[in-house]
Length: 332
Image 1 (cartoon, rainbow, N blue to C red):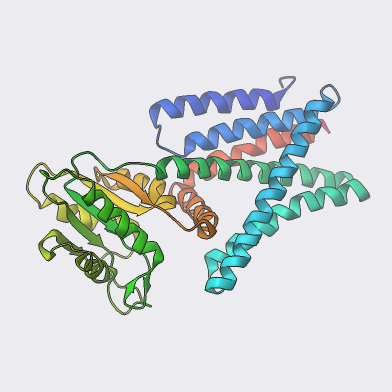
Image 2 (cartoon, rainbow, N blue to C red):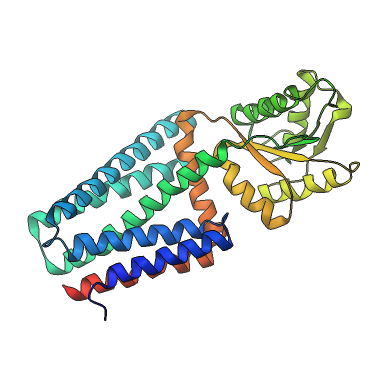
C-alpha cells in the first residue's frame, strides 16, 4: 500500500475529474470527482498528517466545522421560515431536517472530545467525511445554479417556452409570474424589425389545481398585451421532461428558422438544461429571479433531483469515498 493512500486517491479522483470535464463538461459527475478529491486530501491532512502539519490540520478542521454550522443554521432557519409561511410541505421539512443533520455532526464531535472511545471515533471519521463531502458537493452545485441561472436568451429567439409552476387559485403563483415576466422581457428586448416571439406555455392541470397551468399562463400573457395568435398552449405535461418533449413537438411544427429559449426559475435552469440534452431538445434555458427566502430550499431540492437523475453513476462514484475513509481507519 502507498505511504499516503488518501493523497493517491485524491490525485486519481482529480485526474478523473479533468478527463470527465473534457469528455462530458455538462455532467455533474465532474463535480463529484473533484469533491471526492478534495475530501480525500482533507482526510489525509486531518487524519494522517495532523502531527506533521498541526496548523494546517487545525485550520482545515475549524473551516469545515464553521461551514457545517453556517450552512446547517441557514438550512434550519430557512426551513422553519418556509414551513411557517406555507405549511409543512415535504420539501420544506426536508430543508429543516438537512440543517439539523449538519448541526448534529459538530455536536457529535464535541461529545467525542468529552467522552472519547475508539469505536465512536472511527464512526465519527466516516460521519465527518460523508458530511464534509456532501456539504462541499452541495456548495459546488449551488455555484452551478448561480452560473447557469445567469444564462441569456438565444440571439434571434423565435419561440419562448415557459415551463409551468404552481397556480394561486386560477392565476399564476409568484414563481410562475416571474417566469412569465421574464418571457415578456425577452420579447420586449427584440428590435422593432423583428417579428414578435411565439410563446409556448407548458403545463398541465395538477390534482390540486382548478385549471391547467397553460390556460392560466395564456390568460396572463393575453392580459399583458400578447395577441392570442402568438400564444401556443401545451396543457398535457406533468413534469419537466414532458414540458420539454411536448413543447419541442409544437416548436418543431413551426416554420423553419426557429430558435427556442426555455424560461424557468433560476434555480431550475441547470437541471432543465441536463434534461433538455437528455431528450434531445436544442434550446437555450434561461432563469427568472426567485425570492431569496425560497432560493436555498429550492436549490437543495434541485441538488437532490440532479443526484437522482443520474443516481447510478453518481452514487457509485460517491461510494468510492469509502476507500480513503477505510485507509485512515486502518492506520489507526
